[in-house]
View (cartoon, helix red, strand yellow):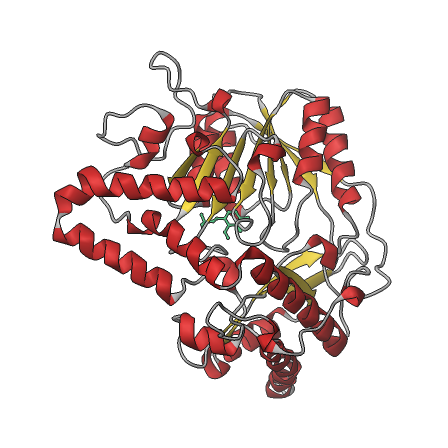
Amino acid sequence: MVFRYLLVAIGVLCAATGSPAGGGVGSSNPIHNQCEYSSGDGICFGHELRRKKFLMADGFTNLNHGSFGTVPAPVADQQYSYFLEQEAYPDTWFRVNYFTYIDESRSALAKYVNASVEDLVLVENASSAMNSILRSIALSRGDKVMLLSTAYGMVTETLDWLVSTAGIELVIVNVEFPLVDEEQILGGVRAALTANPDIKVSIFSHISSMPSLIEPVKEMTALVRELSSSLVVVDGAHAPGQLDIDLNALQVDFYLGNCHKWLYAPKGTAFLWTTRRQQQSDESSQRSPEPTVISSSGKHDYIGRYAYTGTRDYTHFTTVPAALAFRDYLGGDAAIMGYCRRLAADAAEMLVSQWGTSMLVPLDMVSFLFSVILPSTDADAIAYVQSTMDSEYLIYFVYDKTVSAKTGETIFFTRLSAQVYLELSDFERFGALLPKLLLEYSAKHAHV
Ligand SMILES: Cc1ncc(COP(=O)(O)O)c(C=O)c1O
Protein backbone atom coordinates (compact mmCIF):
# COMPACT_ATOMS: atom_id res chain seq x y z
CA MET A 1 0.00 0.00 0.00
CA VAL A 2 1.30 3.39 -0.91
CA PHE A 3 0.63 6.16 1.58
CA ARG A 4 2.14 9.28 0.15
CA TYR A 5 1.20 12.69 1.42
CA LEU A 6 2.57 15.94 0.13
CA LEU A 7 2.23 18.61 2.76
CA VAL A 8 2.31 22.24 1.74
CA ALA A 9 2.51 24.48 4.79
CA ILE A 10 1.32 28.00 4.42
CA GLY A 11 4.48 30.01 4.84
CA VAL A 12 3.05 32.92 6.73
CA LEU A 13 2.93 32.35 10.46
CA CYS A 14 -0.05 34.02 11.96
CA ALA A 15 0.65 37.38 13.46
CA ALA A 16 -0.97 38.13 16.77
CA THR A 17 -4.39 39.55 16.18
CA GLY A 18 -4.52 42.96 17.81
CA SER A 19 -8.13 42.69 18.86
CA PRO A 20 -9.60 39.44 20.13
CA ALA A 21 -11.33 38.77 16.85
CA GLY A 22 -8.86 40.14 14.39
CA GLY A 23 -10.76 43.40 14.07
CA GLY A 24 -14.19 42.04 13.24
CA VAL A 25 -15.72 41.89 16.69
CA GLY A 26 -15.57 45.63 17.30
CA SER A 27 -18.05 46.20 14.51
CA SER A 28 -20.82 44.18 16.16
CA ASN A 29 -24.22 45.74 16.52
CA PRO A 30 -25.77 44.28 19.69
CA ILE A 31 -29.37 43.08 19.72
CA HIS A 32 -31.00 44.92 22.62
CA ASN A 33 -34.56 43.94 21.90
CA GLN A 34 -35.39 40.34 20.94
CA CYS A 35 -38.57 41.50 19.20
CA GLU A 36 -36.52 43.51 16.73
CA TYR A 37 -36.72 40.18 14.88
CA SER A 38 -40.02 38.34 14.85
CA SER A 39 -42.02 35.86 12.79
CA GLY A 40 -44.93 36.77 10.53
CA ASP A 41 -47.37 36.30 13.44
CA GLY A 42 -45.30 38.29 15.93
CA ILE A 43 -43.29 35.62 17.77
CA CYS A 44 -40.01 37.17 18.93
CA PHE A 45 -36.75 35.42 17.97
CA GLY A 46 -35.00 33.69 20.85
CA HIS A 47 -36.70 31.84 23.68
CA GLU A 48 -40.29 32.60 22.66
CA LEU A 49 -39.65 31.21 19.16
CA ARG A 50 -37.93 28.19 20.61
CA ARG A 51 -40.84 27.45 22.96
CA LYS A 52 -43.48 27.86 20.30
CA LYS A 53 -41.83 26.49 17.18
CA PHE A 54 -39.02 24.06 18.06
CA LEU A 55 -39.03 20.59 19.57
CA MET A 56 -36.03 20.74 21.91
CA ALA A 57 -36.53 19.58 25.48
CA ASP A 58 -37.56 22.18 28.03
CA GLY A 59 -34.57 23.81 29.65
CA PHE A 60 -32.06 22.48 27.13
CA THR A 61 -29.62 25.05 25.73
CA ASN A 62 -28.26 23.86 22.40
CA LEU A 63 -25.03 25.71 21.62
CA ASN A 64 -24.19 23.08 19.02
CA HIS A 65 -26.81 23.44 16.32
CA GLY A 66 -24.01 22.92 13.80
CA SER A 67 -23.52 19.19 14.27
CA PHE A 68 -27.03 17.91 13.69
CA GLY A 69 -29.39 20.87 13.24
CA THR A 70 -32.89 20.67 14.64
CA VAL A 71 -36.18 20.62 12.81
CA PRO A 72 -38.92 23.19 13.56
CA ALA A 73 -42.34 21.84 14.56
CA PRO A 74 -44.21 22.95 11.39
CA VAL A 75 -41.64 21.14 9.21
CA ALA A 76 -41.85 18.01 11.38
CA ASP A 77 -45.67 18.17 11.10
CA GLN A 78 -45.43 18.35 7.32
CA GLN A 79 -43.06 15.38 7.26
CA TYR A 80 -45.43 13.40 9.45
CA SER A 81 -48.35 14.13 7.15
CA TYR A 82 -46.31 12.74 4.23
CA PHE A 83 -45.47 9.73 6.37
CA LEU A 84 -49.19 9.11 6.93
CA GLU A 85 -49.83 9.46 3.21
CA GLN A 86 -47.07 6.93 2.52
CA GLU A 87 -48.50 4.44 5.00
CA ALA A 88 -52.09 4.95 3.83
CA TYR A 89 -51.33 3.98 0.22
CA PRO A 90 -47.78 2.60 -0.01
CA ASP A 91 -47.84 1.74 -3.71
CA THR A 92 -49.30 5.08 -4.74
CA TRP A 93 -46.67 6.80 -2.65
CA PHE A 94 -43.66 4.84 -3.90
CA ARG A 95 -44.73 4.66 -7.54
CA VAL A 96 -46.32 8.08 -8.08
CA ASN A 97 -46.70 10.71 -5.34
CA TYR A 98 -43.19 10.59 -3.95
CA PHE A 99 -41.73 11.40 -7.37
CA THR A 100 -43.96 14.46 -7.68
CA TYR A 101 -42.96 15.70 -4.23
CA ILE A 102 -39.24 15.12 -4.69
CA ASP A 103 -39.35 17.12 -7.92
CA GLU A 104 -41.07 19.95 -6.06
CA SER A 105 -38.31 19.81 -3.44
CA ARG A 106 -35.57 19.82 -6.07
CA SER A 107 -37.17 22.77 -7.86
CA ALA A 108 -37.53 24.81 -4.67
CA LEU A 109 -33.97 24.06 -3.64
CA ALA A 110 -32.54 24.76 -7.09
CA LYS A 111 -34.19 28.18 -7.00
CA TYR A 112 -32.80 28.80 -3.51
CA VAL A 113 -29.20 28.04 -4.54
CA ASN A 114 -29.55 29.60 -8.00
CA ALA A 115 -29.03 26.43 -10.00
CA SER A 116 -30.80 24.60 -12.76
CA VAL A 117 -33.08 21.87 -11.40
CA GLU A 118 -31.61 19.38 -13.90
CA ASP A 119 -28.26 19.62 -12.14
CA LEU A 120 -29.48 19.08 -8.58
CA VAL A 121 -30.42 15.80 -6.90
CA LEU A 122 -31.30 14.97 -3.30
CA VAL A 123 -29.10 12.68 -1.23
CA GLU A 124 -29.21 11.65 2.41
CA ASN A 125 -26.28 13.68 3.66
CA ALA A 126 -23.04 15.40 2.73
CA SER A 127 -21.12 12.19 3.41
CA SER A 128 -23.14 10.27 0.85
CA ALA A 129 -22.70 13.00 -1.79
CA MET A 130 -18.94 13.25 -1.23
CA ASN A 131 -18.58 9.47 -1.40
CA SER A 132 -20.54 9.40 -4.65
CA ILE A 133 -18.25 11.97 -6.19
CA LEU A 134 -14.89 10.71 -4.98
CA ARG A 135 -15.62 7.04 -5.56
CA SER A 136 -16.97 7.69 -9.07
CA ILE A 137 -14.21 9.84 -10.52
CA ALA A 138 -11.76 7.55 -12.30
CA LEU A 139 -8.60 8.01 -10.23
CA SER A 140 -5.56 5.81 -10.52
CA ARG A 141 -2.12 5.32 -9.00
CA GLY A 142 -0.22 8.56 -8.61
CA ASP A 143 -3.20 10.87 -9.33
CA LYS A 144 -3.09 13.86 -7.01
CA VAL A 145 -5.99 15.20 -4.97
CA MET A 146 -5.64 18.52 -3.16
CA LEU A 147 -7.43 19.33 0.08
CA LEU A 148 -7.02 21.78 2.93
CA SER A 149 -6.12 20.57 6.41
CA THR A 150 -9.56 21.89 7.47
CA ALA A 151 -11.34 19.18 5.42
CA TYR A 152 -13.97 17.24 7.35
CA GLY A 153 -13.03 13.79 8.70
CA MET A 154 -15.36 12.02 6.27
CA VAL A 155 -13.43 13.58 3.37
CA THR A 156 -10.04 12.55 4.71
CA GLU A 157 -11.30 9.04 5.55
CA THR A 158 -12.66 8.59 2.02
CA LEU A 159 -9.42 9.87 0.53
CA ASP A 160 -7.34 7.63 2.79
CA TRP A 161 -9.36 4.72 1.44
CA LEU A 162 -8.53 5.85 -2.11
CA VAL A 163 -4.87 6.20 -1.13
CA SER A 164 -4.82 2.58 -0.02
CA THR A 165 -7.05 1.10 -2.73
CA ALA A 166 -6.19 3.20 -5.80
CA GLY A 167 -2.78 4.60 -4.83
CA ILE A 168 -3.74 8.27 -5.18
CA GLU A 169 -1.54 10.95 -3.60
CA LEU A 170 -2.78 13.73 -1.37
CA VAL A 171 -1.58 17.32 -1.50
CA ILE A 172 -2.61 18.87 1.81
CA VAL A 173 -2.61 22.64 2.22
CA ASN A 174 -2.05 23.33 5.89
CA VAL A 175 -4.22 26.06 7.42
CA GLU A 176 -2.72 27.54 10.57
CA PHE A 177 -4.61 28.98 13.52
CA PRO A 178 -5.30 31.56 14.81
CA LEU A 179 -6.17 32.58 11.28
CA VAL A 180 -5.63 36.19 10.27
CA ASP A 181 -7.19 36.48 6.83
CA GLU A 182 -8.06 34.53 3.71
CA GLU A 183 -4.78 35.52 2.00
CA GLN A 184 -3.11 32.92 4.23
CA ILE A 185 -5.24 30.20 2.66
CA LEU A 186 -4.96 31.52 -0.88
CA GLY A 187 -1.16 31.63 -0.56
CA GLY A 188 -1.10 27.95 0.41
CA VAL A 189 -3.41 26.91 -2.42
CA ARG A 190 -1.37 28.91 -4.94
CA ALA A 191 1.86 27.27 -3.72
CA ALA A 192 0.33 23.78 -3.87
CA LEU A 193 -0.95 24.27 -7.42
CA THR A 194 2.30 25.79 -8.62
CA ALA A 195 4.26 22.84 -7.23
CA ASN A 196 1.66 20.31 -8.50
CA PRO A 197 -0.01 21.60 -11.67
CA ASP A 198 -1.08 18.00 -12.40
CA ILE A 199 -3.53 17.90 -9.47
CA LYS A 200 -6.65 16.05 -10.69
CA VAL A 201 -9.19 16.96 -8.03
CA SER A 202 -9.31 19.92 -5.59
CA ILE A 203 -11.62 19.72 -2.58
CA PHE A 204 -12.62 22.77 -0.54
CA SER A 205 -15.15 23.33 2.25
CA HIS A 206 -17.49 26.29 1.85
CA ILE A 207 -17.63 26.47 5.66
CA SER A 208 -15.24 24.18 7.51
CA SER A 209 -16.28 22.27 10.60
CA MET A 210 -13.73 22.61 13.43
CA PRO A 211 -12.55 25.33 13.61
CA SER A 212 -15.27 26.84 11.53
CA LEU A 213 -14.43 29.38 8.84
CA ILE A 214 -15.83 30.55 5.53
CA GLU A 215 -13.25 29.44 2.99
CA PRO A 216 -12.62 31.69 -0.04
CA VAL A 217 -14.10 29.13 -2.43
CA LYS A 218 -14.55 31.48 -5.36
CA GLU A 219 -10.97 32.73 -5.20
CA MET A 220 -9.53 29.23 -4.66
CA THR A 221 -11.50 27.97 -7.65
CA ALA A 222 -10.13 30.82 -9.76
CA LEU A 223 -6.60 29.73 -8.78
CA VAL A 224 -7.36 26.13 -9.72
CA ARG A 225 -8.69 27.24 -13.12
CA GLU A 226 -5.63 29.43 -13.70
CA LEU A 227 -2.95 26.95 -12.64
CA SER A 228 -4.32 23.46 -13.42
CA SER A 229 -7.06 21.50 -15.14
CA SER A 230 -8.24 19.97 -11.84
CA LEU A 231 -11.89 19.31 -11.06
CA VAL A 232 -13.24 21.36 -8.15
CA VAL A 233 -15.44 19.75 -5.49
CA VAL A 234 -16.98 21.94 -2.78
CA ASP A 235 -18.21 20.51 0.51
CA GLY A 236 -20.97 22.92 1.42
CA ALA A 237 -22.31 20.82 4.31
CA HIS A 238 -22.71 23.93 6.49
CA ALA A 239 -23.51 26.50 3.82
CA PRO A 240 -27.25 26.24 2.98
CA GLY A 241 -29.03 28.51 5.43
CA GLN A 242 -25.84 30.24 6.63
CA LEU A 243 -24.57 31.70 3.35
CA ASP A 244 -26.09 33.02 0.15
CA ILE A 245 -25.28 30.32 -2.40
CA ASP A 246 -25.13 31.09 -6.10
CA LEU A 247 -24.14 27.87 -7.83
CA ASN A 248 -24.32 29.32 -11.31
CA ALA A 249 -21.72 31.90 -10.30
CA LEU A 250 -19.37 29.62 -8.36
CA GLN A 251 -17.97 27.84 -11.44
CA VAL A 252 -17.14 24.59 -9.61
CA ASP A 253 -17.69 21.05 -10.92
CA PHE A 254 -19.44 19.47 -7.93
CA TYR A 255 -21.14 21.08 -4.94
CA LEU A 256 -22.88 19.36 -2.08
CA GLY A 257 -24.86 20.83 0.78
CA ASN A 258 -26.83 19.69 3.80
CA CYS A 259 -30.38 20.92 4.30
CA HIS A 260 -30.63 19.29 7.74
CA LYS A 261 -28.01 21.47 9.40
CA TRP A 262 -29.04 25.10 8.86
CA LEU A 263 -31.93 25.10 6.40
CA TYR A 264 -34.44 23.60 8.90
CA ALA A 265 -35.12 20.42 6.91
CA PRO A 266 -35.34 17.03 8.68
CA LYS A 267 -32.24 14.90 9.07
CA GLY A 268 -31.36 12.91 5.97
CA THR A 269 -31.91 15.81 3.56
CA ALA A 270 -28.98 17.03 1.48
CA PHE A 271 -28.22 17.79 -2.15
CA LEU A 272 -25.62 17.18 -4.80
CA TRP A 273 -25.13 19.58 -7.68
CA THR A 274 -23.11 18.49 -10.68
CA THR A 275 -22.18 20.39 -13.84
CA ARG A 276 -23.82 19.05 -16.98
CA ARG A 277 -20.41 18.05 -18.33
CA GLN A 278 -19.80 15.73 -15.35
CA GLN A 279 -23.25 14.06 -15.44
CA GLN A 280 -22.25 11.11 -17.58
CA SER A 281 -25.30 8.99 -18.28
CA ASP A 282 -24.23 7.45 -21.55
CA GLU A 283 -24.64 3.68 -21.06
CA SER A 284 -21.28 2.99 -22.65
CA SER A 285 -19.28 5.35 -20.45
CA GLN A 286 -18.58 5.24 -16.77
CA ARG A 287 -21.54 6.76 -14.90
CA SER A 288 -20.38 9.59 -12.74
CA PRO A 289 -21.22 10.54 -10.09
CA GLU A 290 -22.90 7.27 -9.16
CA PRO A 291 -25.14 7.22 -6.04
CA THR A 292 -23.74 5.27 -3.10
CA VAL A 293 -26.58 2.80 -3.72
CA ILE A 294 -27.47 1.45 -7.19
CA SER A 295 -31.15 0.55 -7.11
CA SER A 296 -33.59 -1.57 -9.09
CA SER A 297 -35.34 1.47 -10.59
CA GLY A 298 -33.79 0.88 -14.00
CA LYS A 299 -33.27 4.63 -14.39
CA HIS A 300 -29.76 5.48 -15.52
CA ASP A 301 -29.90 9.21 -16.09
CA TYR A 302 -28.46 11.52 -13.42
CA ILE A 303 -31.83 12.50 -11.89
CA GLY A 304 -33.29 8.99 -12.07
CA ARG A 305 -30.28 7.31 -10.50
CA TYR A 306 -30.63 9.43 -7.36
CA ALA A 307 -34.44 9.63 -7.08
CA TYR A 308 -34.83 6.11 -5.74
CA THR A 309 -32.13 4.14 -3.92
CA GLY A 310 -34.18 1.26 -2.54
CA THR A 311 -37.06 1.02 -0.08
CA ARG A 312 -36.73 3.39 2.82
CA ASP A 313 -38.40 6.44 4.30
CA TYR A 314 -38.07 9.33 1.84
CA THR A 315 -40.43 11.72 3.61
CA HIS A 316 -37.56 14.02 4.60
CA PHE A 317 -36.81 14.57 0.90
CA THR A 318 -40.32 15.91 0.40
CA THR A 319 -40.17 18.59 3.08
CA VAL A 320 -37.73 21.08 1.52
CA PRO A 321 -40.61 23.39 0.49
CA ALA A 322 -41.88 23.27 4.10
CA ALA A 323 -38.41 24.16 5.43
CA LEU A 324 -38.17 27.08 3.00
CA ALA A 325 -41.70 28.16 3.95
CA PHE A 326 -40.63 28.19 7.60
CA ARG A 327 -37.73 30.45 6.64
CA ASP A 328 -40.16 32.79 4.90
CA TYR A 329 -42.35 32.78 7.98
CA LEU A 330 -39.34 33.99 10.00
CA GLY A 331 -38.78 36.84 7.55
CA GLY A 332 -36.58 34.99 5.08
CA ASP A 333 -32.81 34.75 4.90
CA ALA A 334 -32.36 38.47 5.54
CA ALA A 335 -33.96 38.17 9.00
CA ILE A 336 -32.42 34.78 9.89
CA MET A 337 -28.92 35.71 8.75
CA GLY A 338 -29.19 39.21 10.21
CA TYR A 339 -30.16 37.86 13.62
CA CYS A 340 -27.75 34.92 13.77
CA ARG A 341 -24.72 36.88 12.57
CA ARG A 342 -25.37 39.65 15.07
CA LEU A 343 -25.90 37.10 17.84
CA ALA A 344 -22.64 35.34 16.88
CA ALA A 345 -20.76 38.66 16.99
CA ASP A 346 -22.30 39.67 20.33
CA ALA A 347 -21.61 36.28 21.87
CA ALA A 348 -18.04 36.14 20.60
CA GLU A 349 -17.28 39.62 21.88
CA MET A 350 -18.75 38.81 25.28
CA LEU A 351 -16.90 35.47 25.62
CA VAL A 352 -13.45 36.70 24.60
CA SER A 353 -13.77 39.57 27.02
CA GLN A 354 -15.09 37.40 29.86
CA TRP A 355 -12.47 34.66 29.38
CA GLY A 356 -9.58 36.91 28.34
CA THR A 357 -8.93 34.77 25.27
CA SER A 358 -9.47 35.36 21.55
CA MET A 359 -11.21 33.99 18.49
CA LEU A 360 -9.49 31.40 16.34
CA VAL A 361 -10.92 32.87 13.14
CA PRO A 362 -11.76 36.56 12.64
CA LEU A 363 -15.46 37.42 12.65
CA ASP A 364 -15.43 38.55 9.05
CA MET A 365 -14.59 34.95 8.08
CA VAL A 366 -17.43 33.31 10.01
CA SER A 367 -21.21 33.22 9.79
CA PHE A 368 -23.33 31.54 12.51
CA LEU A 369 -20.55 29.16 13.65
CA PHE A 370 -17.65 30.71 15.54
CA SER A 371 -14.69 29.38 17.49
CA VAL A 372 -13.40 30.90 20.74
CA ILE A 373 -10.23 29.80 22.54
CA LEU A 374 -11.02 28.32 25.96
CA PRO A 375 -9.36 29.72 29.11
CA SER A 376 -7.74 26.34 29.89
CA THR A 377 -5.39 23.83 28.28
CA ASP A 378 -6.17 21.04 30.73
CA ALA A 379 -7.89 18.32 28.67
CA ASP A 380 -9.34 16.55 31.73
CA ALA A 381 -10.71 19.78 33.20
CA ILE A 382 -12.37 20.72 29.90
CA ALA A 383 -13.88 17.24 29.54
CA TYR A 384 -15.25 17.60 33.09
CA VAL A 385 -16.76 21.00 32.27
CA GLN A 386 -18.40 19.67 29.12
CA SER A 387 -19.96 16.64 30.74
CA THR A 388 -21.07 18.61 33.83
CA MET A 389 -22.69 21.31 31.72
CA ASP A 390 -24.47 18.62 29.74
CA SER A 391 -25.68 16.51 32.65
CA GLU A 392 -26.33 19.14 35.33
CA TYR A 393 -27.05 22.36 33.45
CA LEU A 394 -28.49 20.98 30.18
CA ILE A 395 -26.10 23.08 28.11
CA TYR A 396 -24.39 21.32 25.23
CA PHE A 397 -21.23 22.64 23.60
CA VAL A 398 -18.45 21.07 21.54
CA TYR A 399 -14.72 21.68 21.74
CA ASP A 400 -11.54 20.59 20.04
CA LYS A 401 -7.84 21.38 20.12
CA THR A 402 -5.26 22.65 17.67
CA VAL A 403 -1.65 23.80 17.79
CA SER A 404 -1.28 27.57 17.85
CA ALA A 405 0.91 28.77 14.98
CA LYS A 406 1.68 31.77 17.19
CA THR A 407 3.06 29.96 20.24
CA GLY A 408 3.51 26.36 19.09
CA GLU A 409 1.39 25.29 22.06
CA THR A 410 -1.76 23.18 22.07
CA ILE A 411 -4.85 25.31 22.52
CA PHE A 412 -8.40 24.21 23.18
CA PHE A 413 -11.34 25.99 21.62
CA THR A 414 -15.10 25.73 21.56
CA ARG A 415 -17.10 25.96 18.35
CA LEU A 416 -20.43 27.62 19.06
CA SER A 417 -23.58 28.01 16.99
CA ALA A 418 -25.85 31.05 16.84
CA GLN A 419 -29.44 30.20 15.96
CA VAL A 420 -32.84 31.90 15.91
CA TYR A 421 -33.96 30.12 19.10
CA LEU A 422 -30.97 31.35 21.14
CA GLU A 423 -30.41 34.67 22.88
CA LEU A 424 -27.27 36.37 24.16
CA SER A 425 -28.31 35.37 27.70
CA ASP A 426 -27.71 31.72 26.76
CA PHE A 427 -24.10 32.49 25.88
CA GLU A 428 -23.75 34.69 29.00
CA ARG A 429 -24.84 31.81 31.21
CA PHE A 430 -22.41 29.48 29.44
CA GLY A 431 -19.62 32.09 29.61
CA ALA A 432 -20.00 32.55 33.37
CA LEU A 433 -20.42 28.85 34.15
CA LEU A 434 -17.37 27.62 32.28
CA PRO A 435 -14.68 29.31 34.46
CA LYS A 436 -16.68 28.39 37.56
CA LEU A 437 -16.64 24.70 36.61
CA LEU A 438 -12.94 24.87 35.71
CA LEU A 439 -12.31 26.14 39.26
CA GLU A 440 -14.57 23.44 40.66
CA TYR A 441 -12.50 20.82 38.82
CA SER A 442 -9.22 22.31 40.14
CA ALA A 443 -10.57 22.33 43.69
CA LYS A 444 -11.64 18.68 43.39
CA HIS A 445 -8.22 17.65 42.10
CA ALA A 446 -6.03 19.99 44.16
CA HIS A 447 -4.89 17.34 46.65
CA VAL A 448 -4.80 14.30 44.42
C1 LIG B 1 -17.68 20.39 6.70
C2 LIG B 1 -18.52 19.15 6.84
N1 LIG B 1 -18.64 18.32 5.80
C3 LIG B 1 -19.39 17.21 5.86
C4 LIG B 1 -20.07 16.88 7.01
C5 LIG B 1 -20.87 15.61 7.04
O1 LIG B 1 -22.22 15.88 7.10
P1 LIG B 1 -23.24 14.66 7.22
O2 LIG B 1 -22.97 14.01 8.55
O3 LIG B 1 -24.58 15.27 7.14
O4 LIG B 1 -22.94 13.74 6.11
C6 LIG B 1 -19.98 17.71 8.13
C7 LIG B 1 -20.70 17.37 9.36
O5 LIG B 1 -20.69 18.06 10.33
C8 LIG B 1 -19.17 18.87 8.03
O6 LIG B 1 -19.02 19.68 9.09
